[in-house]
Image 1 (cartoon, rainbow, N blue to C red):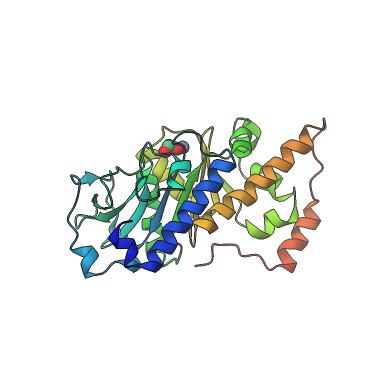
Image 2: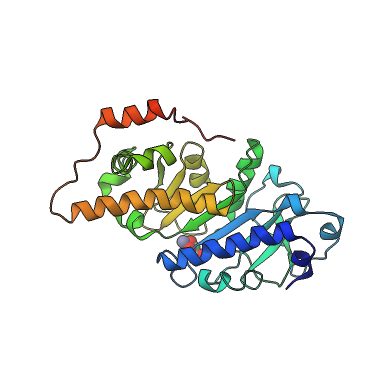
Length: 273
Ligand code: 2HA
Ligand code: ZN
């Protein structure tokens, strides 16, 4: 194991949690081949020793200037790497990057020169927004949850908040644990700056973002939290599709029942910091 983790048990705990979650992603069938990616802000563990580590690969451009990433460090899944491999060997299937002073590029400092995920522009745009807003959220997760992607193939669910309303109405917990609902980003080329910009706009007002015919993006206080946000909404999608397979449109909770949940649980209208 790399000395960075040996001397930093708290950082190791964070990386171990990433490994635990990537195992779940594989078990759920959300992470075929190299599907999905993860970024965790680990700046709180950075010290002089980490700052002095040399780059182990050439500097790479992010594709955007991200001013709030000054002096930050991230653990990122490697491009082309499998979640199921990361579950066992997180430092061989991901790397630690440092944002360069120009705030538009990064360098890999540990463990191995594993190039970060192709969706890095989306992940770092979200991380920049979280820091800009003073959020304590540290983790971003992109994955391919089967039922949510399936529902994004139906035009009805791409309009307004139709998908949010249907998912909320499937089981009271969905509304309670995902009170901001799911935002929709129309299909865009994977890894693009356009996808990153559209995702950023949607996450400002939603718990999770759904990329049409592709997957989801969630933010969380840690990676387990981002996983739970996705899982809660995907469970509702599973219930919808199971009920639909009985041959008719599921009834769903009434508007009054959902309103009652909002009132009784005093649900937030915006993401708590
Ligand atoms: O990392 O999921 O969207 C592979 C992907 C790209
Ligand atoms: Zn993807």
